[in-house]
Amino acid sequence: MRAGIVAAGIGGFVLAKRSIDKKRYENMKHREEVLIYTDQRRMASLPQLDVSKLKIVQDLEIEMMSDMYNKMTTACNKKCIPSKYRDPSLTKGESVCLDRCVAKYLDVHERIGRKLTQLSMQDEELIKQIQAEQ
Amino acid sequence: MGFRDFLLVYNRIAEYCFAHCIENLNDRSLSDEEIRCVDVCCGKQVNLNHKLMSVYMEEQPKILEKRIQEVQKLESAQQTTT
Image (cartoon, rainbow over all chains, first blue to last red; front, side, top):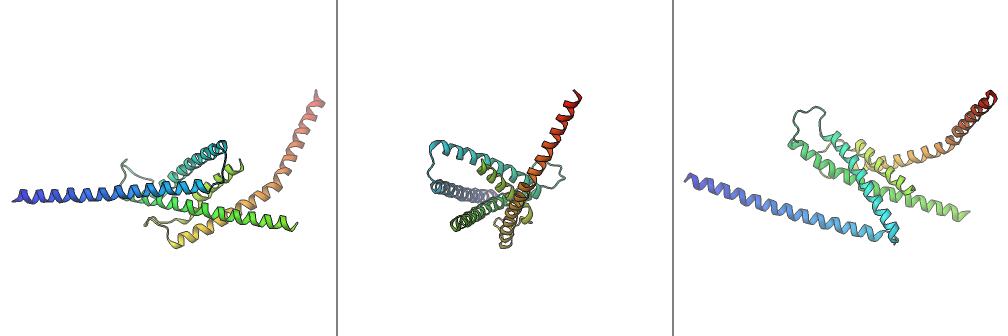
């Protein structure tokens, strides 16, 4: 009788874990697709460059990504992990905090990028106007 | 090369505005206030950069000239001693 309850419990747990893992996998696949799609769109929006310049742009992008990654690491370290700790493993609170920190940092990074391109386009238009007036 | 500097400044602004504006990490998405703060911070940093650049362009030649004059004085002092 008790064995039956235990077996049912374990069975229920296994089924729940399977469905959660399946959902996580689908979410991950979806995120990958979105990433590939946005990457393609970004590359398509660049003006047509010859092969040598394209390589330079790609190298530059990789360098900037790693720079951003390092800055993000220090920022999230400062925000999420207290200065005094005794255990090397991450607590659940710290893991959740780091997850949110990365999401927010990437969001901020993207917004600032959009705003900077907007501002620089405004500057270019101003310069063109001034040149046209002269 | 100028584009590389621009990208470095972009990363620096992102780091600064993140540290300045994001206070708590209770949610995965940005709140409206945080978005507003980031916009303001970004504009401010850009204006700061412009101002610093313009003042630097003014002051740097003066410092360079002072240094050139010092070097010239040293050289003429050495020539008189030899």
